[in-house]
Image (cartoon, rainbow, N blue to C red; front, side, top):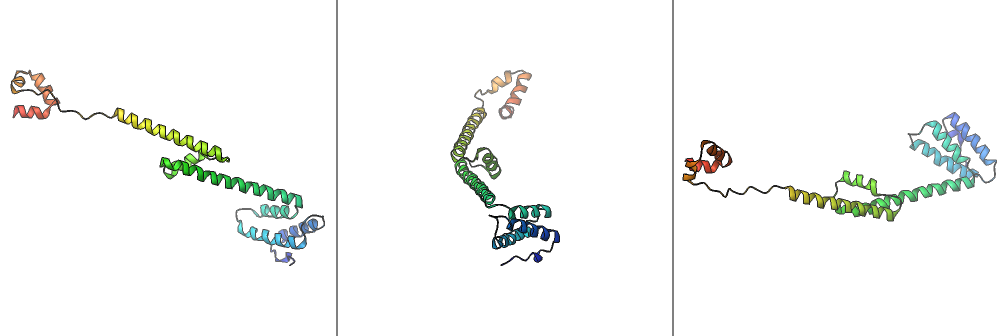
Length: 192
């Protein structure tokens, strides 16, 4: 199948592609006509899919792709492969860290924040960081519980000093007022 350049509506793009094809086909080690046709079809589909790129960026990308030597294409494939491996490693390490940090019962926002700190390209490093983060959280939680336990006031015990009617009658007015504010129930009983 020979690619029909006339199918490309944009005249400038069509001329640019025809020129790039003529240049590329004249060099040894570049695309054959069938490879060229397949590549142009793939790239023209890409042109319609990626709306965020400007027409100039797409033209440059198509021209660059079509004029690469076999060695350059191999380097690009290798770089793309390595990038995908890095992305997969990061995704895998993120899942590892999530499993470790699940013990902490973090909500989604806190989990995302924690993952930003612990996930790295290296699985062992990620595991170590996640365990350290979990350990720190556990220590903090233990200290917080201990602090809360030690700083919680004890409920007031009922007053142990009961005042008899005679003791109450012997009190001065100021003492009776103080007794009334501190022990309103006992005051009512003694007055009642």
